[in-house]
Image (cartoon, rainbow, N blue to C red; front, side):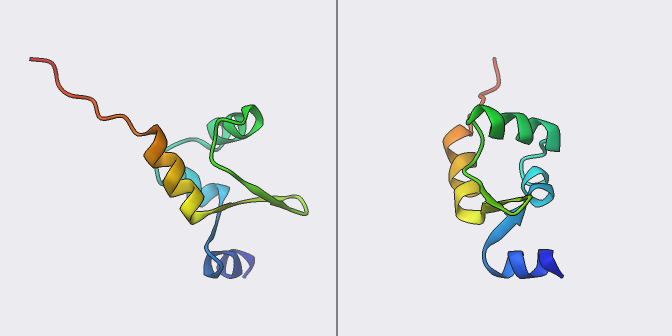
Length: 69
């Protein structure tokens, strides 16, 4: 029920964030600790991310790799 309420407000859980770019929860936690991950919000003991913050973070860190000839 909590996840559904969070999703309706445009927030994502850690599980939902790591599914998008294929990260592990541990990697996201480390990046959060280092300040290199997407902006996050803490509510009590839970961590949430705004969907638009995650999208912007992915866009800023996306690198197009061209194949070598």
